Image (cartoon, rainbow, N blue to C red):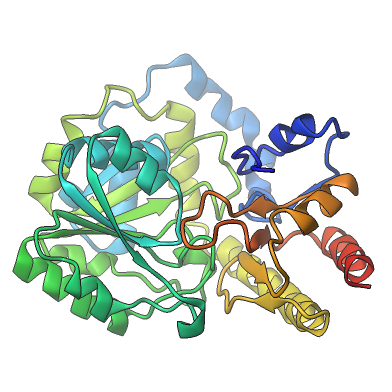
Length: 354
């Protein structure tokens, strides 16, 4: 069976099998701790923002981001989630040649194809530890207009060091090829490693960020891009007025300054990974060397068919990998969830492997 795409909407799976709703959704990869506590405590303070038109220029939020990242505010563009920014980029490169490092977030390919781009692929390999194949990417870059790399990668959770990416960035600059580095999950990695400072010196670099993953506010839809000033200006011409609502702007401004919440989150996720990953490997599974809040599970044939069905029947949803080119259903992706949910998952996996 070819499962429907569902990412964080497990009802598409359960309805296709006439099953009851899931109890634990391991297919969603937002912060398992939920939003910062101040969001609920101060909700009444945010309420008035729903009654006014939002700032169409996102000035306060852009100023806050620019100061935090130590880059000029003219090099920041805020969007209605990273998905809108990806759509703007797809429009900008409409009809061009795009090279995607896969398996990765499926929306890159969908958006590129929607805009008539010629899509080419470089595959990450399990035998290489899912690491970035800079040499193979460079070999295919001739005539390419845009390269897309997700770092940390989705679905593997593997993070590429700056020393690995900078040579690729330098090659892109020489060949006048734009390079998108999607850092939607960078803040789950210790010390928050990022290439964002390089937008001040590399005109072809585009760094994407999501504010909905770490802060568990996907319903607000908020993200931003950092790039050269000219590119930001040109990209903004494709963006609708009032793209980002006022509530999202004011909450995002608070989120990016909440260092304590990010530190607390990383500590919790690491403690659960230290507990879960050895247990999973003892059961015969392979687990990617993930540095974030999700991981790729393998070790048994076609887990997107066999294990996914078993877990759904026991009211647990996981992410199949049929629409991740290069994986084709062999693996499943799971998030790090709350302790009681992780315990239930381990219990079921032990039963399944017997």
